[in-house]
Image 1 (spheres, rainbow, N blue to C red):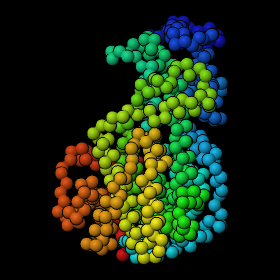
Image 2 (cartoon, one colour; image 1 turned 180 degrees about the vertical axis):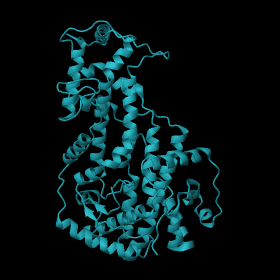
Image 3 (cartoon, rainbow, N blue to C red; image 1 turned 30 degrees about the vertical axis):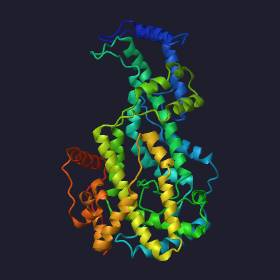
Image 4 (cartoon, rainbow, N blue to C red; image 1 turned 90 degrees about the horizontal axis):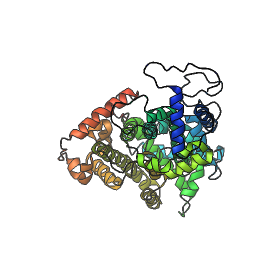
Amino acid sequence: MNDGPHDSTPNAGQPDPDDMAEQFRRMMQQLGIGMQGDPSTFMAQLAQMLQGLSGPGTAAPVGFQAPGQQPGAANSVDWNRIKDLARHVAATKGPDPTPGRGDRAPLLDASRLVESWLDQACEFAQVSAQPEAWSRADWIENTFGAWQKVVEPVLTSLTEAMTGLLAPDSPETPDATDPMMALGAMMGPVLKQMASMLYGSQLAEGLAGLAVTTVSGTEVGLQVLPRAQVVLLPSNIAAAWNDLDLDPRDIEIYLVLREAARQRLFNAVGWLGPQLLALVEHYARGIRIDSSAIEDAVDVEDLAQLTPDKIQELSQRLQGRLFEPTRTPEQEGVLSRLETLLALIEGWVDEVTSQVAGLWMPQHAQLEEAVRRRRATSGPAEAFFSSLLGLELSPRRVRDAANLWAALRDARGTVGRDAVWHHPDMMPTTTDLDDPLGYVSGESTHPDDEVTANLDAELEELLRSEGGGDPEGGAQPQG
């Protein structure tokens, strides 16, 4: 603020503050934004506006001192606000009652029943945590930490792209007196805050979409729960399965059966959950933000009229346009491995639950077909990964994977089938899904792939650096 006298002599090597202010004024006028008064006052007003949009208690952008703010206060993404927004959006999509005893008691009964079945069908032990029925809000609250970890690399790339809009075009050594550099220095914090708001709005919408459709804790295929546990969302089950002329009790038992099998697998195979999330994170770190789409969607003039509605409008303009359509060879390799691993997980769940349901549930064929139809339909999970991570994720080869696991069981029994999960190097590859009998007989060969080897090394380092433990931690079969 220019409320009092100041030393007009610039420091050595630093641009004159008055010159920067005048340059900023002229640039804003060229962009069609008339400015009255001191540009620094305008910037302070922007900072206060952003602070108000972010909610009480949120720090203003770095470089601005709102009234009462200490110099140097750090700016960070308000993840709690994004989580609360997701819960709010989910609440607008229909009633979300808190599960009561009428939900919990049948769930416990179903869990006891299916766990006794699974003891005979697989080598992985039942998880120790009690099953729980969650509301949609509960699901968002309990899985948000995993989603935050996944999307942080994307948000970092987006903020860099936003601030890059004002970077000088010249590749030469930057000149501190360059007006574009001055503008970038002044507007950078605002753009970073704006990026977090835009992406945060999309993240909240995406999570709300998942929360109102997923029927169990990990139906999305990733272990996003804070611990291995069977979780159902009763309020979503009826809507998702209302086209089946089946006893609702049979549907619940079948869903508990699938989730219990999946949680046994995640719990017993120590490397599996962390590696899935590491693969998604690794892909996200290589995402290229489409700067031209941002330039088309965001005008500098927008900064002068930020409101919650304006933030929502800008977010919708960028929906599905954030990412460049091309992928690096490394990303293609990550995507292939991720899809294969997801297919192997769901194929194993299909194989195990098919054996159990075929013995104990007369309507198992209808239930299995319903799962296949649900999986084949591009639902909120696919939309979430596509819009927020640029990740076209569809485990197309689940049936091939189920056939491979069935062939292994026929040849080696459940012990031999489940022992494959001991180590990631033993896992079938995409090539093995093409030739399951060759994999079972041990005749398949895997070419030496330098990209895959490099990816393995980077994933191992990522897992270790984030406290994921030994990425080679094996499964712990019963007995």
